[in-house]
Structures are given as structure tokens and as C-alpha cells.
Image 1 (cartoon, helix red, strand yellow):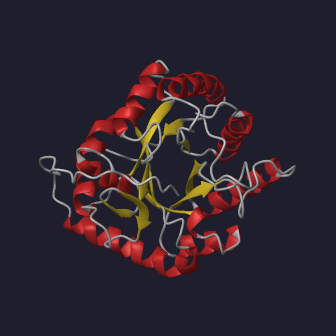
Image 2: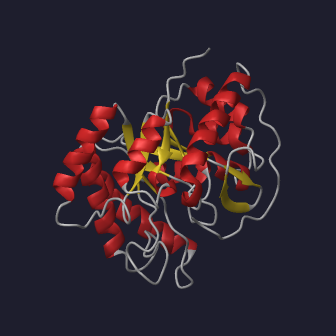
Length: 301
């Protein structure tokens, strides 16, 4: 049996009905070696006065369990109780988003996390694409400096419907930031089905050595809805073969943020599906298969 260099994890946003210690119990007992920690309710308030001791306590828990961690910044309604995910890096006023990302970097440093994963945001009606891009680059340039000073890696996640939607967009953004070594790319395997023009094999190969974080879920072409593995059109064996091909050694965490009601079962079935696909994966992924052509929905998680 192949011993792969990455570590399988599970996203805490898929355990929203469990307190964090109990979520760690279930995830760890299920055979996972990492978590993707979504900052915000219900598990870790990044703006709480006790965030430093909470981070120290969590690091000790993760160390005791020999679990790795990536920090995710996609909590809903954390910054605005009326508008999901807003403000973003492409809004005219984004002070709370910038403060949140800065705090995420500080928490990641305290946890010795692999990276902080972040996305651009959906353009608001009053901001054009060029202006939004300029706002995003300027704001991220400051965050890159802040993170680099603390030894924290940032990982840009392309999201369907957002200004940075594909791996190619993430590479362009990274280039506009000066190709800093501390900035990598997050690839959500399901997103590759939904929007990537060359599918999951092409997207992972394009990310290549810049891949710092992988999210694991299934999807259907053109629909941004995270699905249980095996219920969409993701070619998981090909994805695993490509991760082997490019030498990925980070965290690959299941992300099912709308499935907390069934979290223990899904933790078990997702791990079983991954292991089965790993056994079936070819030694190399082969040529890039044609991707389905579809217009992505604007639904975001």
C-alpha cells in the first residue's frame, strides 16, 4: 500500500453542532491527522479577549493528538450579521476583513499552522473588476508583509463566482504581489469540477509546487455546492494520482460545511472513500480530461 506524504484532515465547519473538543475527538478517533480550523462561531472567536490562551490551549491539544492544522477564514456572518461573508477584500470598505485576516495570521502563528487560507470575495455591484483587483492587491500586499514577519504562509483559494475564481486567477494575483515565497494556492477539488477549465487534473498540475492546501469534496459542473464524495462528478482517483505526481505533502481536508447534522457518519464515509480511491488511483493521472462547460452558480459556502 502506498504511503502518501500528505495528511488527511476534516474541516471544523462540518462539525458546527459539536463543541470543538468533541469535534477533535470524533475527527481524531476516525483516523484523521489534521483539522482545517474555520475561525468564527461556533468554535474559535478570533476577536475574543481570550484568543491567545485559547490558541495556546488548542495547540497543546493538537500536539497531544499529533494533528496538523490549517486556518480557514470562510466563516459566514462573522463580520456582518446581515451579509454573509462581507465585507471582502474587493469591497470599498473592508477594514473588518483586513483586521480579521491579520488576526487569522496571528492565530496561525500561535498554532504553528501550515497556512492561512483566504479568498478574494464576490465583486459588489458598485465595484468593477479592475478596481476590485486593485483594492485586493493593495490590501494583500500589506497582509503578505505582516504574515511574512510572523513566518506564516498565506494560501489563496479560488472560489466559484469570486473575482479570483480559478487557479489561473490565483497565479495572476500571486504574480501581482511579486511572487512571494510565503504565498501559495489552495485548491478545492470540488471547485475544479464546477469551474476549472481543465478539471481537477489540470488545476492541480497548474498549481504544482505552489499548492499549500487542499480541500476535499465533490461537486457537479457549474454548481457551487459541496457534496459528499461519490455523489458528484469528481474523479477522485485521478485527483489523488495528480497529488502524488506533483509531490504534495500538505493537508487535504474534507470540507462539507452544510453537513454538520451528519458529521460523524460523513467523517467515516469520506475517509473510506478517499482510501478506496487511493487504492484505485493510477500511478500517474494521465492526460487532462475534457472539462464540462457550464456557467457557475453564484452560491458560495
